Every structure is written in C-alpha cells, then in structure tokens.
Image (tube, rainbow, N blue to C red; front, side, top):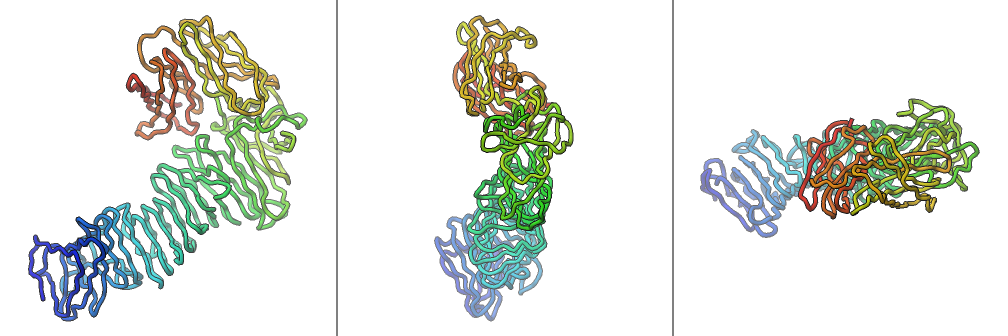
Length: 639
C-alpha cells in the first residue's frame, strides 16, 4: 500500500494508524503534511518491514490536542523528511521507540525543524534511538522549544539529557531512573525531579529560569545551578536540595525558598534576592563560601536567615528587601569543630524598641536595624562578631554614624541592652564595620553609642505631611518605633531655613510601637515650611524632613523637592487636588516600576514626605500620580 500526494496535500488522522508489512510512503508519493488530530489518545504502530514509510511534514494537534503514542512493531519508525511540529497541549509519547529526522531511503542527512509550540509535551522513554543516551529526536536542522512546553525523560534505566541549542528547554521533567546531564543545560521554565528519579548534574553549569522542584534525588557533582529567570522563582519539593555551586543572577523578581536549601561549594550573588525563612533556610555547609552579595542596580543578598555549619570564618550575605545588603560575619570558631552551627538574619526594625539601655556607659542603640546571630550547634564555641553600616543603614534623613571612637556594638540581654563592646572598627562614618572579639554568648546585636551627642542612629519618623484644612494647616507624622522620646515639637519657617516652634506634644507609649500624631497650625502662612523636632531622653535632638504648604493655589498639579535629591534621602511631594485617594508610581527610565504607594489626600494643597527605596542607584526617575484629576507626571534626579 502506498499513499499518493504532493507538497500541498494533507492527510488528517483522528484515530489510530497501523502501517502494514508492505506499506510504503516515500519522497515521490508522500503528502505534504500528515496531521494527527484526534480528540484523545492515538497510536501509530510500525509494521512496514518491506518498504519505507517516510512522511514529509508531521503535525501533532491542530483543532484538538491528542496524545500520540509511537510504537515499534515489527519495524522501527522511519524518517521525517521535513518538519515535526507539536501544538497546543498535544503530547508526543515516543515511549521506547523513536522518530527522527532524515533524508529519503533511511538517509542520515538532516531534515527541517522540530518545533514544540504552546504547552506541548514530548515524552522520551529510551536511552537509545535518538541523540546519544536518549531517544530525543535527532537530525533536525533547527529545534525550537517554547518557554511553556515540556520535555519529559521517563525510563527506569539511565538516560542522558540532551543539551538543546540555545535558548534550550521550556520545562524539563525527570521521571524514573537516573538521568545525567550530557553538557550545560538551559531550562527557561521549571525543572522537576519526580519521586523515584535521580538527576546527576555532573561538572556542568545548568541555568534555570523557572522553579526548581525536587521530589526525588539530586546529585550535585561538581556542577553549578544558576537561577536566572526574569520573574519570581522558587525552590520546593518534598526533598531538600543540596547544591555544589549556587548562583543567583536574575534580571527581576526574587527566588523564594520553600524548602531548606544547602550549598556545599560557593554561593554566588550576582543579581536578585533570595527569600528565606526560619523554616526554609539557606544553609552553607562546612567549607562552603558566599561571594558577590551587593547593593548594585539589582541588589543581591538573602532576605531572611542564613545558616553556616563548620569551623570556618564566614560573611553572611544578609539584608532586607528595600533596605539593601547589610552583612555580618563570624571569625573561625574556637575550639575548631566541623559541626559548629551559626545562624544570622538582618532585621530592619528598631533595636531601641527592644529594651532599655542597661549597660553602664551605653547611651543609645540604633532605631533602624539590628542583627540576630545565634549559635545553634552542639558545642560552646567562641568567635568574633562583626556587623556593618553603609549609606543604606539610615531609616530617615538624619545622620547615622558620625564618630567611630564612640561607636560600639551592643548586645540585648534579659533586662535590655545590657552589654556592649568594641575591639576594632574599619572604614569611615559613611561605610564600615565594627568587631567585638571573643564572644561566647549570642543573640541580638546592634550598633550603639557611648556618647549621646554622637552616632544618632536615628528615630524612625515616617508619613510626615502638612496640608491645608479650610482656614488652618494640619501637620501629621508617625513614629514607627517610639522609645526613649521626651517630646515632639512642630517647627515652622517662612523660608525653609530658620524655624520657630509653634506647638509641642509629649511622647506616648515608649514601648517601641507605632504612634501617630497631629498638630494644627491655627495661624498658617501663605507659604509655610514645617519640620518635627524630636527630643530624646538622652538629650539628643533629631529632625524630620521638611514639608511645605502653599495656600490658595488654583492650579491642580504636583511638585517634588528637593530635586535633585541625595541618594538615601526622602523627597517631599506637594499635591494640589480634590480630596481622594491617589496612586503614586516611580519608574526607572527604562520603564521598570521601582515603587508604588497609595496617598490619601485631604484636599487643597498638602505636602507629604515620600521615602525612596535606599537601594536606588543615582540617575533620573519618573513619577506618575493618578487620581480624580487624571494623571500628572514629573521627574526626579537622584545624585
């Protein structure tokens, strides 16, 4: 039996196809396209022992999304002379058989293209018949795999995973038996290691653009797993994964750990944030190292706890989203034990709110940050602790570190901040670190000062705003971490330089919690500048950002000042509009959104302090405000 056809003809099969002993289809009589488009499962059985059955172009799925099973009967499948295309959610299950490209008469020349469109699935159930170590179809000039397609290696014996040409696989599934990488693998979607299967990474570098799901066994070898997707990614599964080398290099989005994840070699932080929790740690084994954590254009660090096992000195690559990379470190513990365990996490919250100053000579501690560093192993080691500061440390516009000679590291005890010390400092007041040697008890550590007039480590004032309310001006502010405060004074100026006090309010709870305040200016100026003066128990005085109110403006719009603004400082947004809720969005010049918040406007003219993300690099940014008046735009320059 033979088929007659030409390059423009098509035959559609919606059921099974069995090729008998004397069936033949070759270049002179094959239809242009053979399409398998059943509504369910279809089987192609090859029994053509006498002649070749070679199709030109083969399409799996069109109107329907069939599962097409290839079966080697008394004969093996013959070549596809042109293109093999899978569409939609169709499945081509090669089982233990094969279906390769090639030239007529069983030739070994290359055919056209192998294409997986949409969510198509290619299932491979043999370790021979195609590319070396598997039955992945070979001898196609081009291979095009969509981001959302799936290739599944599924055989109980060993298989070699074919290294597809760039851009590589969509999703990759490892099912049954042991699968070994044959070269560097590029997976734009997710990689799943199913229960009962093993993936050997070898000595290669494998890039993952989606999720890592491990329900089986992973042998890291000497290789590297790189997470480089442009969106959110995760590591999950029923089995915890141990990588040899681990790299995060993401253009956008974070990598979230949904299982404890270990590194035995080097953890490299190039771009992108790793989210961890106490239940799902990032763990560095004995002799493992971390490198590259940074506050660059796309910062890279661990947003959450990091654990280190072993007797090594180690720099913890910790930080917090929005506050940047804020490292701490330990020296090599003594005595030296490979089962020592230390866990560290950077906390973007007020240390002052956690307790009073009970250590003799300690004036105050940071209102912005602290580190939780614990020893969690079976031993009782001694180590040197180092914590750091930088331009990202501050949580408002006041100064942070001003005098290294009075800067100390404080430790929280049962009754409060009951211990402090300093063995050495390095760097400058802008960026540096402080080390306290020979510690054998651990917990919460913060920057502190022995002098009330130095190292402000400032109060966390936010939502400082002033606005017109009929015949008066209202001034509002929030202290997120009220502790150690005597009073707040509202000060007014006609020019933003010389200020006088128009009213004061006492501190309230003093328990480190949030407190909101409001004061009314009963005799407002046409143009008035306001700031909040904070007087602390220690005698230290700090100030909020300055906000401006302009009364009797008829023009709707927005203004931002100072502009340009120094990196790490806040800006003041002056809005003249009807009452209502407004959406503020801040974009990079390339269009990437870097900040969004909602503003509740009380009407007329109001000025509000806007906190800019501390990690934003210098450059031009565009601000968009959307509300009842439509959309207004302006630009901001960060220096």
